[in-house]
Amino acid sequence: MAVFGLDIGGTKIETAIFNNDIEQQQSWRIATPTDSYQELLQAICQQVCKADEICGCQGAVGIGMPGLVNEDGAVFSANVPCASGNNIAKDLEVLLQRPVAILNDTRCFALSEANGGAGQGYERVFGAILGTGAGGGMCINGELLNQGLGLSGEYGHLPLSAYLQQKYQLPILKCGCGLTGCVESYIAGPGVQVLNQHLSGETRSCIEWAQALKRQDKGALKVLACHLDILGETFAAITKSLHPEVIVLGGGLSLVDALVEQLPGAIATHLFAGFKVPHVKRAHFGDSSGVRGAAIIGSVNAQAE
Ligand SMILES: [Zn+2]
Image (cartoon, rainbow, N blue to C red; front, side, top):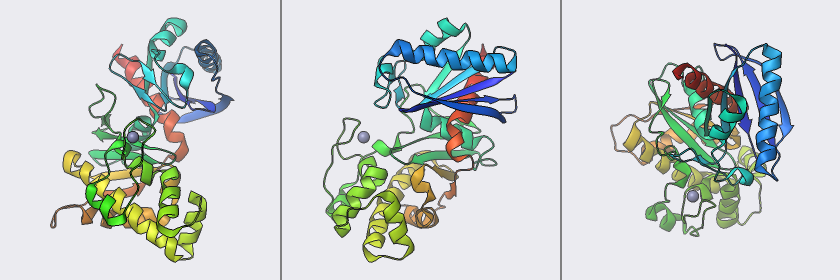
């Protein structure tokens, strides 16, 4: 059976064809229609039909996208606003005449890395995207934990502790999710810019910050210390509640060497002395984890039917 993974982003839709062993065969991208929900559905159907034609059969379909999918299957996505409030999977099942699975893209990432990725060989894997946003998922024996409500894994929207807010005199920020004081506002891409401004007075993009870190710039190192403190405390909270053996990092900020290397130490600072800290690894599949994780849920969903 062929399996198709679709990664629907705010600007492009990536479609990839996989074989039964979830090995990618080919992929392509189109621009995401953002004006109307009907156009979005049509574009998705066209990609699935194209994949059917290439494979000469009806493939299983899994979709990953930014935003949340609630208990009833309704999607809430700031990146693809026309989809918000709609049950995409249900609507596509009618149009495509087959089961369709849908999942948050950072959960797809976690699933992909836990199955054949950097988390392979570990029983308990937390996959975390740290890029423009911060989200992920906990996998046990290759399966995502607690997906009923659709919220589990949203580590970026855990609150910043009073201790760290006071320690660095951080501004209390309203998050894009509607809550206030989420750690995402400090640790994801735009947050790194906030920290640079606040701690070193520099207007720096993430890339400029990473470059400044390489030349051991004092201000950049100050930002790194604060960033690691917040990220370490956040992953320590995840460790206290879920006990992952390994944390697999993906997204743009996972490319900052100093962050990945120093994170275990930063987690240890916020855990109890004498207890084991999870391993920290960089993602194996990187950007292709979105379509790959989508294909995995598509395959599992089709087999369950
Ligand atoms: Zn938030």
